[in-house]
Image (cartoon, rainbow over all chains, first blue to last red; front, top):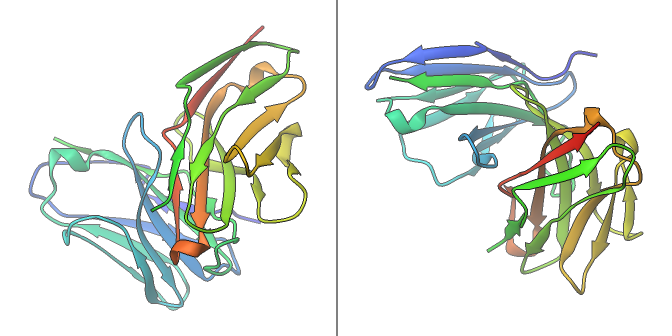
Length: 114
Length: 115
C-alpha cells in the first residue's frame, strides 16, 4: 500500500510569494495534519482536518491556511512568505482524530524562502 | 499545557550495546505517548505508542519503551544497537485531559551507533 505522499519534494520561493503544498493520505485515512519542522527542532503542529472540516489549529499566523478535499487529500497554503517560513513541511494522515490514533507521516516538502 | 523534554541532544553507543533514548513529559491528564524515528531528508516513521496497559511497549525494529508514571518518563530502548539505527528520534505526547488531541513533539535526540 502507498504511504502518505507529498508534492513537491523541494521548493524555492522568494519573500512575499505564495506557496501551495499538497498531500495525499494513506488510502482509508480520513484525517490529515500539517506540521512545520524547522532545522534542529521537532515538528510543530499547524492544522488538522477530518472529513473536510478543520479540527485543530496550531499557533501559526493567518498567512497559513489549509483545506481538505472530498478524496481526503489536502493543501497547505502560505501567503506572504517570510525567511522564517523556510522549513520541512510534513503531512501526516490517520484513520480518525482520536487521541490514541497513530499518525503516519509523508516524506515532507522542503521549502526554502530566499 | 502539555510538554515533552528530550534531555540529550545526542546519544552515542557502540554497535551491539544496549541503547536508551530518554523522554520525560508533563500533562494535566492521562498521557498518550509516541516515539518516531527520522532518517536524513525523510519524514517521521512511527515506532511505538503507549495508550494504556502494560508499562513496557514493544514496537518496530526491535525497539521498546518503558512508561513510568511516577517519573513521568517514556524512555526508548533497544537491547542491541545496529549502525542502521543511527537517526533522529522524537518523543511526542498527547493529553486527553487537556482537551487537546494535538501532539507535542520533543526537540529530538540524535542517535549515533558506532561500528
